[in-house]
Amino acid sequence: MELRVLRYYLAVCQEKNITKAAESLHIAQPSLSTQIKDLEKELGVTLFERGHRQIKLTQEGYFLRDRAQDLIAMADQTEQIIQSSNLISGTLRLGAGEASAMLRIMKVISQIAKDQPNTDFQFIDGNADDVESMVNAGTLDFGVIMGDRPLENFESLILPERNEFVAVLNNNHPLSNQKKLMPQDLVNFPIIISSQTLVTDKFRNWWGNLYDQVKILAQNNLAYNASILASESNAVQITYDYLVNEKLFNLTSRPLSPKVTDPNIVIWKKNVHRSNLANLFLQKLRESLNN
Image 1 (cartoon, helix red, strand yellow):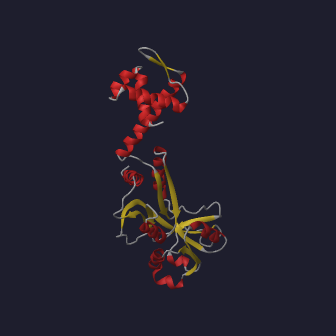
Image 2 (cartoon, rainbow, N blue to C red):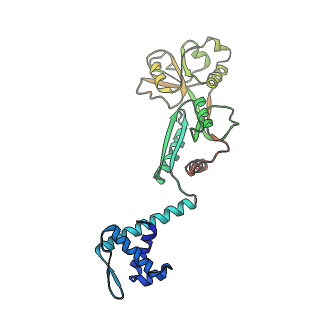
Image 3 (tube, rainbow, N blue to C red):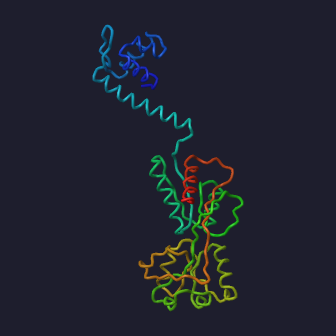
């Protein structure tokens, strides 16, 4: 069933007369009659009871009329959306590390998913080096970079939330009773820290002259497994606040003094065509910053 023929059929249903329908469609009456008969032949049913002046719909005719109206309306809407460039569909691919600031990102994505049912999302976990590389290669639409990095090759948007580093240690650790932990407090205990070079450099500056006394026990990309090691030893894990389930692993966290923080920066590739979904994500994210 072609949409053109269904439009002809609906015109006949409305006029209840082949001649008047042909006039409204600006086609010859014999041509319209032939196409309606071909439609009946294709479906194997009689759609009209033909009278001298007026035709009546059969039961099958009424059924096809209702379905044809739905199909035509859907086709018109689809064409209008595509022509107006308002189609929101497809997959948005986003890479990020672990941080509580991702809550803002996920709220935006949740709202888009609710409003745009033809969309889906792919999340890639990784450190800043991995995420930056994938955005640059075009395998990710957006990345969320935690930390200060040179980003001249990307478009970027700085989020207002900052990640604060804390020391995570088991509840029986000798330092667990202190309210804050300073560089000199940690030099006597093994340290678990992110493998990102810039994070290591950040803490090289934080320890200052004490850095040569620091024992790095392990380096990690994501916080979960490292927190298990901290729970089973006297090691101190340096990670972002709110990432570790302290109750699950009998852990506690303590702020660092002086405080150490990282920015959260959304990045995307320069000079590339973005999908409507990607543009909507950016729009909603920017709107969230103004609320």
